[in-house]
Length: 305
Length: 67
Picture (cartoon, each protein chain N blue to C red):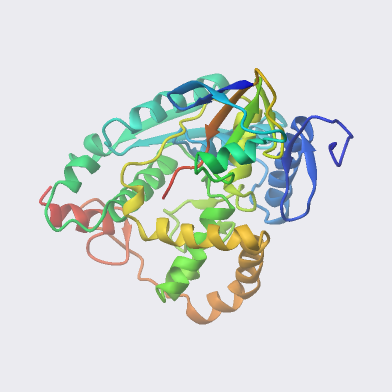
């Protein structure tokens, strides 16, 4: 048994979908090349961009920072990072500390924003309230708002998130299964809003399977926070993920084909189904909003915060 | 014939039950999916088809968590 590319007998990975065998160096190179290819193909970066990486300290965001740094080294872009502390006891602090160390390693501007400081409540406290709407609902909305605000404050022109192939395929299937055609139009490698206050979001890892990102950080000996969010199993995403992974065992190309199929129909979907939102301001916080209150503030009002 | 297994807080000696015993066989015994872990043999990353030998140190690192 030897590496399909260089002949090295120390094989660390077998790509089920192609049968390709890879040694450590060729595997690392293949991931970095593929991400760079996605960046170029989807035109995710422009020269002079200041990219804010949403850095949790987990494997996906650390990999995003690591690979985007190669564009920084070539003086194509500048980088900065933000870490959101949602206030989840015995979980988040380790990720925050790891994120700080990576930002220091690269010498980039880094900001840690906590839900408690910004909104006066932690996710743990929200989850103790009766009739809450589920952890991911609040976490997603508050995190998006915080990251978008940080991008404006730090002068970022793009926000890079660590969404991988599995995340993207889960998003496609979840929205389809829920009949949420509006959200289905918002997926993709690059998401832009009509409102100027929303910074363009990019997903450089969109074509890399989650497992390959895990192997990449172990192979490169990058420090990451490997742990499960204590609220993760309560989500519909978790259920959808399980079904897709079961299918992928017998059909190893299914995640790629789901993504490719979505990319083919995305143009038509956007043209036919995308809603036009009114561009107003939230009367409570001043953030862009289609309604009187933005989503984050309407949750805060419901929670009495 | 024994090998050492390291997985999370586990650090124990285990019997090699038969010839051609692979990491994949070990993962099946531990009811772990090869999709959620990576394996090291004596400190070096290896694929799951790798045969476990006497006195090997096998480390299993969970890289994907549920949800």
